[in-house]
Image 1 (spheres, each protein chain N blue to C red):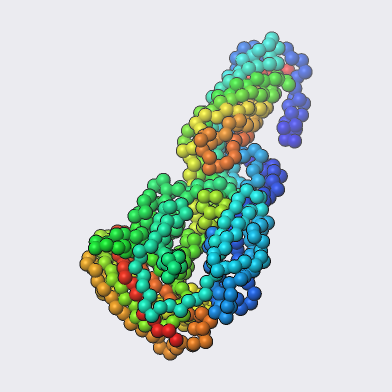
Image 2 (cartoon, rainbow over the protein chains, first blue to last red):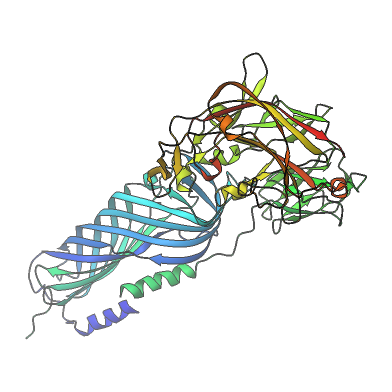
Length: 258
Length: 374
């Protein structure tokens, strides 16, 4: 709805005649700051997850430089790339049933089995993202973008604790160990995450005032965040985050007012 | 804007919650027999059940009914009559059909003990994952009669042990032949402190260890007591004790959950308690086993604390059960199996509150209970 609204507004201020770019340059540069809001989630939610009791998107900043090359004479099509330094994180609180879990002590001791109860999860990763985006300009100062991206991830964390429930040691027929009240079992799977991620990105970019832009991009990770040999979490999880950015465009593409 | 997006994501996620999967657990939750068949509550463990028959029941042809995990099924069916003169096996299948668990169900009468009952700790078996020793006793026909309980199953949770001898309770050989029970106070690695249990004292007792309470209410996890249809008079045995070098007091605000107390030396604890079981107190636990205000306790035999420090040679004890004031034995209750005995041995006297010296080692052997049959 919001996007459509933006699009409508964009079209309203559009110049129908698509002549040469006002700045006349073949290359343009955007500088942006932004926020990521989203989650790292299994798609679809597995049946083990019975209820999402809480979700915090956290504060995730991003810094980005994009470069776009004009592809055709009119400048309707562009191909761009860039570099985005960004954080993706979230905190969730879920109620699960029969959920594969391994509580790990600092000394490497393990207590693995099936957990039924509350699971608190914190995911966080710094990303250095390189998108390759094709742009179609609906008008000079408004473009729809789509393309793949790759990310290098570092300082990653996937941790949390389990509480208010019970663990069946090993498998569902194992000894039942109850965690109640203040008893929490911490877990940490930070060392089981991949450092590379790839996916698809789609979004819009609007130069709403001369040189000033806003943008919204959804990036959908297509690779399981966990390494293949990590079996404790039995389902794949993908980072899906929406980036909202504001920025400065080096060469304004907004129609000069006559 | 951020809030709206967060809410939108939340709404999307909510709409994706799938139908609840069928249960994968295959538990017998409880056993039902006609009124008056059982002298005391049955003991339901993860894969075995002990039914305590009332002495007024003269046969072991029983048709127990079982309450199971929702949706689970049992074979033979609940209510099937079977002969419990031998242990009977049941297979429970989970609701989703993927998991099966086999239960051994035994039915026992409270026997009248011999005039002298001997526990020499010569028999051990391993748990089903072969991680630790379980001491057991045999009957006259050399068949397994009952197992001693220990906190080993709880210690196994911490993952701190890798060999049988790393566990707080194991069987050791003794010079001159034979075996003894070796109980050691152990640290619980880094996992134990996280759940408020920085130490595990070696313990061995008559009764059962309740894994379900092991993390949340460890003092309640030790269920002390075994039916005893006679009056105990004397408690004897021998032990060696070496206290660990550094005494730790549980202190969850400190790193690792403990702080050093240089003024204290560890001591062991060996005692026997004779008590009446009532509807509300089927067994004693780590909180009330010696409490002076525990109305159920009839008599106790406690190795004096002064004697329990630093005996590197065998030290023998020979104690009379000391009756508590105003307590008498009711022959009628005795006949219906309402009395129990608890024998408790631990390498750290305050182990129940997770204080003690890691490395404290208690070796016990030749336990005898002298009883008088009513």
